[in-house]
Structure formats: C-alpha cells, structure tokens
Amino acid sequence: PRSTLFPYTTLFRSLAVVVFGILFVARCVVSCCHCPPAVASFYRFQQLSIQNLDHSGEFPVVTSSKPIAKEAFGLHVSLSILKTNNLSAFTPQAFAFADALALDCNCDYETFTPAQTITAIRVFSVNAFQPDIPANGDVSSRLKVKTETEYLPMDLFLQKLNVRYDNYLPDVVEFDLLLLQYPLQGGEYRFRIEVTLSDQTVLERSEEHTSELQSLGRI
Picture (cartoon, rainbow, N blue to C red):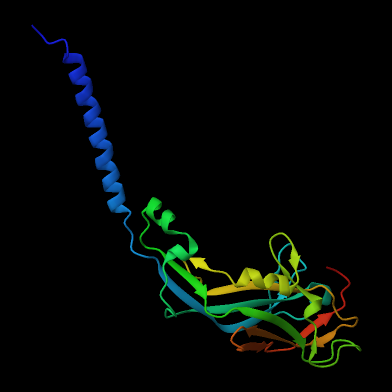
C-alpha cells in the first residue's frame, strides 16, 4: 500500500527544489555583480573660446554677421575638458556607490572629478562701453547665463560647471552669455573673457574681431 506520507514527501521535495533554485540564482547574481572598485579619474579645464550670438529669434544662434542689435547680442562660451591621471586612489564607498554597483552589475564604472574648479568668470569691454565704464572695464554684471528655464548671474552658474561626471566625460562644456544691459549707444565693441581656476590659472580669450552693435530698437 502507498504510504500516507507521500503527499508531504512530494511537497518537501518541491520546496527543496525551489529553495536550492533561489540560492543558485542568488549566487550567480552576486558573482556577476562582484565589481572591482570604481575608477576614480580627474579632469581639467583646458582652453577657452568665444563666438558671437544673436538672440533676436526664438533661440540664440552663433553668428559672424554684422551688425547685431545691441539688444540681441551675446557670447557663446566653450571650455574644453582634458582627462588627467589619477591624483590619488580612492574607492566609490566615499560616494556611497558600492551598493548601486552591486545591484546593476555595471562593472565598467568611472567617475570624473574636477582637479581644479572655476572660481570666477569675468567679461571685460576692450574699448569704452559707456561713459561710466572705460576701456577694459568689467561688464560681467551686465551679462547673464541663459539656461533652459532662467537667466543666471555668472557667480550662481559656477556650481553647474564644477560638477562630477559619472561614466562619461564630455570634451567641452558650453554656455551662452546674453547682454541684458547693453550700452546706450550703438557702435563697435570688443569683449574679453577671463575664467579663473582654483589653482590660480587664468584662461583668457578676446573676440577676434570687433562686434558692431546697432541700435535697432528690437529684441
């Protein structure tokens, strides 16, 4: 006669198979996600370049045309980035990323931290801007950075430049400076930008040609 324990024996065997299956899968996952420490790299800001902008339309556009309405003038700024060798060895635990690495099995992980940060961005007018701003006068306060949602003073925008990148390092960072307080009179102007870094390096660039700002009375 069949044992009365048969149903329970079958149940126990099924449970055992399920438990061992779960343990096997978990072991495979843990083995898959056993990532080495994340690579900690650094980058530096290398070169500065500027181009003229015309923001009389819906979006600012780079232009070499003359003249530009003084109400619509801006500068497109590009900062090239260079990856540097590791300055020190550290692991991702300092940034609390160890768990994230173990969960997504992404072992190709690298962080890029700025080796030096931008401490100031200043814009100067090479020639006299207006009676109270002589040649080589600082006109930084008259320009703001255009983002997708707002206009920011340059000192507030700095925190958006001094960032850490994960897994991907761009070759260049770009932003638009719009002249929101323009000179009273139209004429030819030339602008110079200085970017000061935390290691006292100063990146400097002047416009290659003067910009003719015309009083067209429009935006």
